[in-house]
Image 1 (cartoon, rainbow, N blue to C red):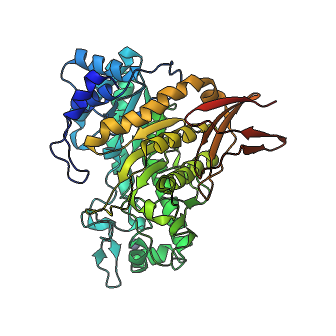
Image 2 (image 1 turned 30 degrees about the vertical axis):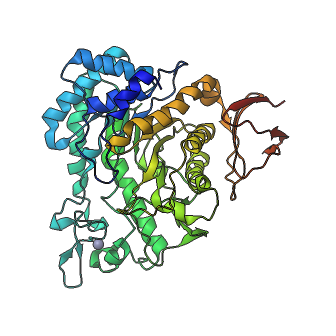
Image 3 (image 1 turned 45 degrees about the vertical axis):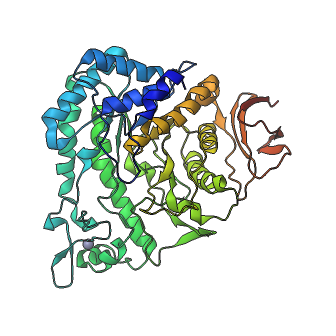
Length: 482
Ligand SMILES: [Zn+2]
């Protein structure tokens, strides 16, 4: 970090993570990020830029200033996304088009956060509610009192309404000749979701019982809801975007292929009693059907966060390995389960995520060093793009940690673009972690030390001689593997 700019960082509001003081403006966030990061030392080529929920919108009224900020961000491998808001089509569209035109002029990818357009299927209308024995409508409040979660089988009429919220934006971009490269949603607490009190609510609903004779079996319930959820994402969103922009990267938070399990919980998710799980010390990994292809999405979006409860799931003495192990499980699941032609753009968050109001002081923050090692392993296991969510005040630090690894990784762009990941092991005890990309007869290898083992790690390759990987803390190695 350049010392002169350190001062700029120190005047960021020092606020807690739960209660943020005055929100920063987008321009302030961008300046903080620019100050905390260095321009890329190697060309980015076709590697996807880093995106962040904190880097969305138009920073200035002055387009010369906007261009300057876009260039500064691009020099660092960072991209701005526009935000579409169906509650303010005129205003948000004008801003989005303005950003898109500037990006087109500068030869930058046009990206969009279209989350607001997807909300809400459960809009509170009684027609979307469950129905009890007495024929009265009722909602499931177990996701929070502000959410009127209703009947998964009462949403058909909402499909055209939701699609119509995307249409004016898609049409305007087409008419303006702005090619959409990337579009995502953060669609979570809406539509059919099987967690919390949803199963109990469906069992109390006459319409759900009619549609789902196997309702008493959680797996049948889950499969029905997940199938519906995938279908509606495809029908109302992915298909509409694809029709307008066939080459766009289209995705949603937490939608990605998997091996049948999910190794993390979102902040609002509670496991209902009776749902099947695979246990690992105190972790309860949920079964999770792989319906990614039914969503119609063109990129996978796993979520690799330091969720607060994770720390207490395992007994590893090394506090870093409690986080690292789980986050590597999550990332590896997505990498090994996603076909090579579908890009993986992963959410990342480093500061301990969603802590309670009074966190247990025993829960230690994941170290910066091991977090950055984790990002290296994600890249060497097939992650194509990185995306950050964080609280306002965390933005500069969060993006700095990601961007430093991203920038250094570009030295090996030939491996990242053309190599094949060949190591997906996640040691169940603290032990050296190895990831590798094979390109022809060469391997790009990263080994991260846990557990104090000094011996070479033997990397087995099907039908090929094994490769011996010595320790090389903090660096990648290229190994000739004839
Ligand atoms: Zn129902």
